[in-house]
Length: 183
Image (tube, rainbow, N blue to C red):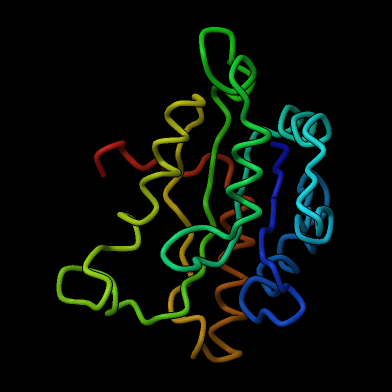
C-alpha cells in the first residue's frame, strides 16, 4: 500500500508532537512518502498538478496537522480548495480519489476534558473533524478513524515517543478501521 503523509504544520521546527509523528512516518521508508507542506509552499502558491499526481499515486492519504482554533491550519484549507477540484476529485467525472483511504492525524493542544458537552469547547474532537469527514464522502474516499494526539501542550517526551510508535503502527496497518458517517 502506498501511503502519502501530508504534514500541514506551520512551524514544524518548533513542534514536539507533529515533528515526532512526521519523523516516525519518515523512518518507515518504503512505500510511505512524507511531505512537509509548509516547507513546499511557504508562499501558499500550491502546484496543483504536482499535488494531484501525488494523490493519484497513493492508496492511503494522511492529512497530519495541529488543530488551530478548532479547525485546520490555513494552508490545508487552501490545499483542499485548490487541489480537490470539480471534475477531478468530485462531481460526475471527479472520481480520481474514489476508494482511497483518508486518515486525519490531528493533534490538539488542550486536554481531552476540554472537548465534549461538559468541556470548554462543548463539542467533541470528532465533531470538530466533521467537515473533513464530509469532504471524504464527497470525494469518495474511505474515512478512517482519526489518529488523535490530545494534550500536546503538556505531553511528556515519553508520551510523545509512545504516540510516534502508535502512529508508525497505524501507518503500517494494511486496512484501517473506518468511521461510520454517523459515528
